[in-house]
Amino acid sequence: MPSEDRFVRSRRSEAITLLRDILLIYGLFAIYYVMTVNTIYFTIMAFSFRNIMTIFRRSAYSKYNTLSGSELVPSVSLLVPAFNEELTVIENVKCLLTLNYPTYEVIVINDGSSDNTLGVLREEFGLEPLPNPEMRNSIDCQPINAVYYNPQYPHLYVIDKPNGGKADSLNAGINLSHYPLISSIDADSLLEKDALIRMARMYMENPEETVAIGGDVRIANGCVIENGAVKHVSLPRKMWPMFQAVEYLKAFLGGRIGWSSINGLIIVSGAFGMFRKDYVIAVGGYRGGYPGEDMNIIIKLHRYMLENKLKYRVAFCPEAVCWTQAPDTYRILSNQRKRWGRGNLKNMIENYDMAFNPKYKVMGLLTMPYNIIFEALNPYFKITGLLALVGYTIMDMTNWKILVVFGLINILSGYLLSIGALFLEELAFKRFTKLSDLARLLLFSALKFFGYAQLGGLWRIQGHIQFMRNNNSWGTMTRTSWKEESKAAKTA
Image (cartoon, rainbow, N blue to C red; front, side):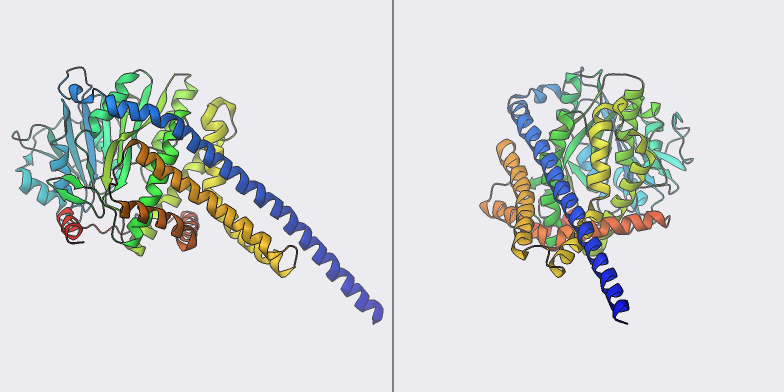
């Protein structure tokens, strides 16, 4: 018996030693992981600061107003996929029809809406079926039901088609489009009047190499909207859109300016982007049947240009602003983020061969590895890191104060990145004129680390689980009419 007890104690001691070794190794890995991701974040932020002065000078001294009547400006087809958007689509179309741009068309694609999206469009603009519409069929998509048109609105077309998803709608719009540039715009978004001409100006700086340009997307919740335009900028009143306002500032100003400066931008937001149509057709158009089409089209463009050894750039234009309506409830926001998680994972799996491949230059050596390791897998490292911290504490492997300090340093790093994005905003654009708005941005930049950031990781994991279960649903997205949103903003 005594020898048996000694054997049990010995095996238990070996198990504890092994567990300690595993925790130690993982702890070192976690430390280097955090250090690496923060180094990348701050490096990209530094690139953003380096380029913001160029952007500021372009914004301040740009001749974009003189371009609005110039014949040299390339013509653009604006594609607006719409599924159950009857509450927002009219304001969106009115906004698009009054842009400061010489030659363009607006193509709304009603993607088999179950509400009255098509009906309100036909009633508002007096649209009738167009006999024998010229569909080029450059890209595969579902057969359309009809194209609606009214000569009194010569630049407006509405395609009615069975439900096939956003990508299929965009492909249908491309097949009808008449111009060499296309711009994708969400039906729940509003463009600033000069947004398109600012983006075109960037395109005209290097039209041969520019294949895509992303615009800056901002949260419209809380703003005063009149006649399809943002008349007064203010922050959202509700908690969920407020957290998203902080996120968007960091992602677009603190991230995409930097990534675009090294030609490593992996996504142009589906809410607002501009593309060369010939290259979009060359890569087969938008991938249907799965979320993440906005990331997928950019990855395909990178791959095509690099494999064919063509000079190119995917740019970002922060002066071109699109205002979008953000989810304002937990359910809708969680559905959106799960969908994003599915789309991101799908794109990483489909294009894993680009990662760490010198053939794909910045995309292969930096962008793809970053998105796989620090975006797709990030929530798993967060969870296991938290479990490791619990194990450290239980096994008394380190002083709890050291863990607290490490956690605070990590939070401080993230907070500094949010402050950096806000500083970029104030340095170049100054859209938030009230001190109370700046104070709220600083407050929510800190609060997001205590619950909201953790929810983001959870939603991404749930999205991955949905992907594994072949759950490809879009999720319910409830809209609020712009009139109601504006009325609430005025009375706030």
